[in-house]
Amino acid sequence: MIKKSIEDVKSVDQQAGEGVSMKMLLSPEEASNFAMRQFCIKAHGHMPLHTNSVEHEQYVLKGKAKVTVGDEIFEAKAGDILYIPAGVAHMYETLGEEDYEFLCLVPKKEDTINILSC
Image 1 (cartoon, rainbow, N blue to C red):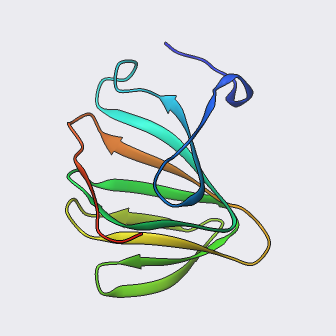
Image 2: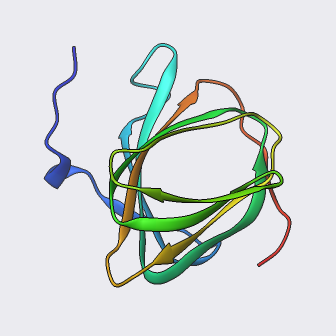
Image 3: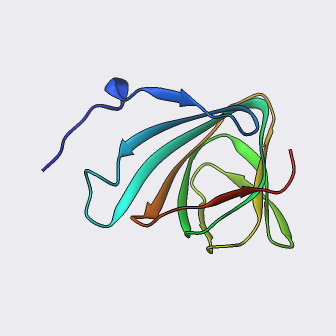
C-alpha cells in the first residue's frame, strides 16, 4: 500500500516543449503495472509533436489545450479522457490563460520517446 500527498511530490521541468513539468505520482518501481504522472503545461506553453513506444491514458484536470493525435486535432478540457495509442504522434498547445494539467498513466514498459518537431 502506498499513500502520498501531491504536495510532497517534486515537480520536474521537462526539456521538451515550453512550460512543461511533470510529477511522478506512482513510479514504475512503486506500482505493479502502470506509472501515474501529472503533467502541467503553463499557459502559452506547449509539448512538441512526439511519439512514445507505450500507450497513454489521460484525464484532464484543468485548463484547455489544442491536442493533435495522429491526423486529428481537437480541443481537450477539464473532465475529458484521452487514449493515445503507442507509436502515434501527438502534441499539446495550451489555450487561454489557464495552465493545462492532466494525469497520464502508462504501462510499466520501456518507453522510447521520439521528438518529431519542436
